[in-house]
Amino acid sequence: MVVLDAGLIDYREALTLQENLVVEVQKGGAETLLLLEHHPVYTIGAGGDSGNVLDPGIEAHRVNRGGDVTYHGPGQLVGYPILDLGRRGRDLHRYLRFLEQFLVELCGSLGVPGFTVPGKTGVWTAHGKIAAIGVGVRHWVSMHGFSLNAAADVSAFGNINPCGMPECRITSLTLERRQEITVKELKALAGERFAALLESHLPRC
Image 1: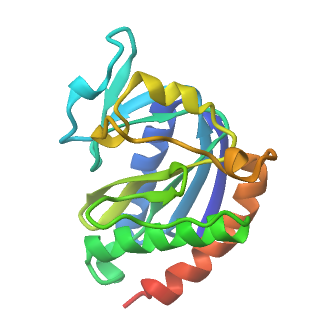
Image 2: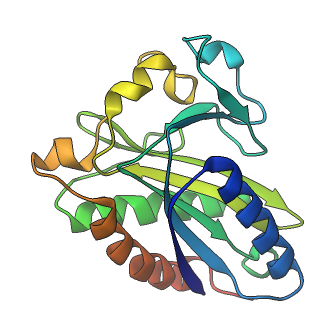
């Protein structure tokens, strides 16, 4: 699997990059984990409610992923795994649970206890939601993925009902640790840990 650091990138540019990589994987090319940050942007999943965008002046892109509305911006690690799930069990539920386990372990490696909540997708700490997940699949090749708040400005989530949950508090690794955790630090840990867990949780058939 290739791990590609795309830096700080516009959302539409990243979407085009994902779409191109999906085509390559469908043709038998290498699976890729894109790691990046976005300029500030709000996105709404295919089945999401635009009413969860509380400020009508905010631009929000509707995209072909699961989940509701979320925020992406600097200080947040975004990961887009482009994987051939057709050769990894064809089980979307299992893939989502794998992403959660990866994020829980990534948080744990930095001394932040994370956990999942039955009936909801994502990762929480005792102080709020720290990571969101929303995926899309085209002919069993995955796109979109996860976001983990490193040092993100969590006040930006105040313009939305995150993931369609008005009561949802948002936290970050920096707030949890009370010291800055950078996206650069996370990228180094995430690429290695993701590849190792992928082969143990979703081995290729």
